[in-house]
Amino acid sequence: MHHSIAIGRAFYDIDASVDVQELMTEIESAVQAGGRFVRVPLSSDRSVDVLVSPGLQVSIESFAHRPLEIVPSLETEPLSGLDEYDEFDEF
Image 1 (spheres, rainbow, N blue to C red):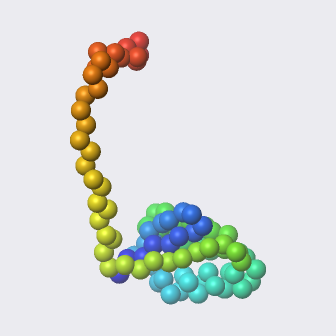
Image 2: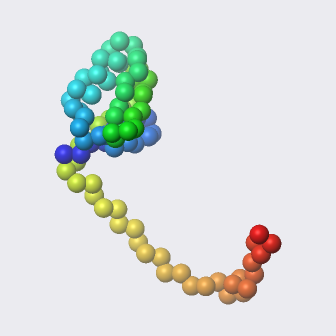
C-alpha cells in the first residue's frame, strides 16, 4: 500500500516505511495540543516539518497503485510565416 499526504494545498508521497496510523495519531495529538511541528518522512533522505494546528487541513490518501494520468496528444502544425522569424537570433 502507498500513501500520500495533503497539507493545505501541497501534496507529498509518504515514505513506504512510515507507520501511517502512528503518523495520523501524532497529527491528531498536535491539533489537540493547540499546535506543534510534526515531521513527515517523504523519502529516506527527505522530510517536511509541518506546523499542525487547528484549522490546517491535512488528509492522507492510501492507494495500491497510482492511477495513470491520460493526457490527450496534441497534433501540431507549423505556423505559416513564423518559421523563418527568430526573435532570439542574437543569443
